[in-house]
Amino acid sequence: MTVSIEDRALAIVGLNDIELLQERILQELCEHCGAQSGALWVAGERGGLRLRAWRGLVDRSALPDTVDPSLVQANPWLAGATFLVPLVTSIGEVQGLVQLGDSLTSFADELLPASARFGAFAASSLKTAARFALLQRQGLRDRETGAYTLSYFTDYATKEIYKARRYGRAFSLLTFSIDNLTSIRTRLGAPAARQAQQLVLRVISQVTRDADVVARAGEQEFHVLLPETDFFGGLMFLRRALSSLIEEPDGRALEARLPLGLTGGCATFPRDGDDFDELLIRCRRRTEERRGSLHHQLRLDPLSFWDEVELLLGNSRSPKLPETTGEPARRGKVADVLFDELQTEVARELLREPGARGLVYVGGPLIRSDLPVVRSLDVSPADFAPRVYVLGKRADLVSHPTITPVFLEGDEHLARHEFLLWLGDGLAYALLQRRGRGATWGFHTSDPTLVEGLVSKLQAAYDLQPY
Image 1 (tube, one colour):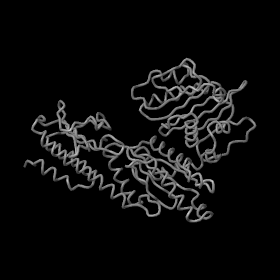
Image 2 (cartoon, rainbow, N blue to C red):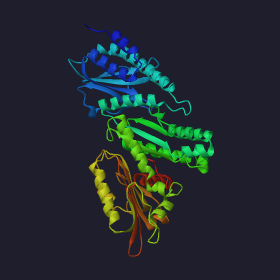
Image 3 (spheres, helix red, strand yellow):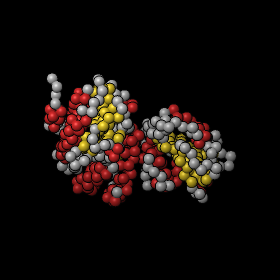
Image 4 (tube, rainbow, N blue to C red):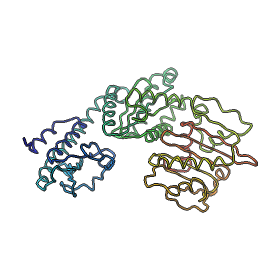
């Protein structure tokens, strides 16, 4: 029996679950147009249309993650063997785009008017479902802090795991813990403890997107779920949130009375686990690793980049670094060739996985074309994703296809020091060194928290982009 386009439209109008609605829109259009493959992009809070569903014979790797809505026509159109149906409301808002392919016969011009009518119904339904989801979320908040309840968060995470498994997406789960909340309540009173909770929630919320969900998991713990975010993206979020707390005036005022002790950890699906409990365990384990980091042991937060470098380097008469439960860190004499060898090795690792995001900073007296990292990255693939910066005084390197030179004339710190900082997807390393007469004194570490802190302070010192 042939199903009319009106009946297909009626089948989607009452659906409030946006995930189910997206699947049904694609299914109805594929069946109506006789398409064996299809893909759907839907408007999101970050601007642009994001890939939300696909089916049939479609090659996922050939589909773009986003589509610019300004390129979407107002009416359906044929592009060779592909049929494109815009989802546009009656007032011209582009809510989505459907791409159909692999027709059983061929896409006929007669499909255009009916598909346009269905597209208008679908656009209106998507807008309504998105509004319904927002209202639903607003009614499931914790009264004290305004964060979502743990029950809602768990339900949301379960749906995100389903989507991630089905469509091969990643998402990140983060935990934040106010370690000193009990002390704040005991010494400053319950109002101060509530203020600390609300402050942390406000700071975290300032760096979230509409699709991100923040929930209160206990007295001192918050969970954050970041859809479609890889591990490096989760790590950058964690850094932004912790930095924002330091910059927040209320946060500084409270810290002056008694430190909050805010720590956090990040885990990503599927690399760190394929269910919620496993991801949460990994998050908490990484939070514990942060507590044992040399960064926390030495209370390095208040120091500037170069003050921290001098403290970590020390000298032969400096006291030993404290023992930590985190990654190893060492100071002492280092081989003169170590700095060059590490540049070559880091470049080799970056080229091994050119699509993996990361940050590399190489600093020294001169920006030269014969630096090992420059030579090694002279020829990089088009999909090279890491960002590599070289800092120092201008020499014979003016520009580079992959590396960004940061010219710093007359910086006396760089005249005496060299450093290499590498922050990647699950990787962290730092080498700091000071050349002297007859020996080079260095400090190196693979402590992720310490490396993140050095990177953040370097960016602040020289006004470098956070990512």
